[in-house]
Image 1: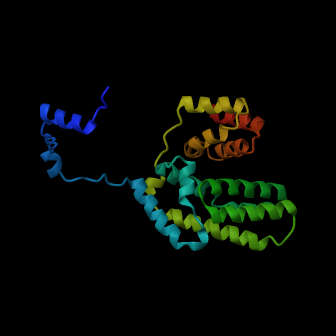
Image 2: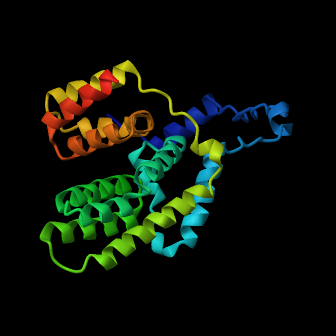
Length: 245
């Protein structure tokens, strides 16, 4: 068989089947209304504005060492919940420096250490890094019963005072807003995890922390500490008391 000459074949096909001119694709219709309409940005919420103000104030307080992004991550980036929890923190822990001094004066060293430990945990959850470190240093000194305590107590009191001042700069209507109550399904899920010693219980607790603290105060705080420490027997007891309330 004679070999096929591809060039000759293409030339013949071109004569027999002339190429159709390529049609220009129609330009998409432009939505005149969309073109003429101005893009309206959604205004920031009151909580977002307060959070922005908080960032500005925190950046001016270099010794405060505040990591807002860390605190927001712990609360699922819920700015309203974060601000409510910050207010609750000041109400519950604002006087912890004086409480620890009183406990030490009464010879209650272990109680003082436990209070410093609790303060450390809540401060860390809120991203109050400087205060967390001050509470940790004091806790370690009380545990080891070594070193001079007065400088550590002074540092702790100063950083607590800075947090208190910071919170007072925020709009009261944001801080006093009532947190939505946790749903029955959320509480049941947390209870199931606590009953089965599920290590995911602490993540579930953190999602409800702002609401629980606003409604149950110290009881909710002790519950969080027990779950974080994997002390599930205590967590079951505390959660039972909380649900009964």
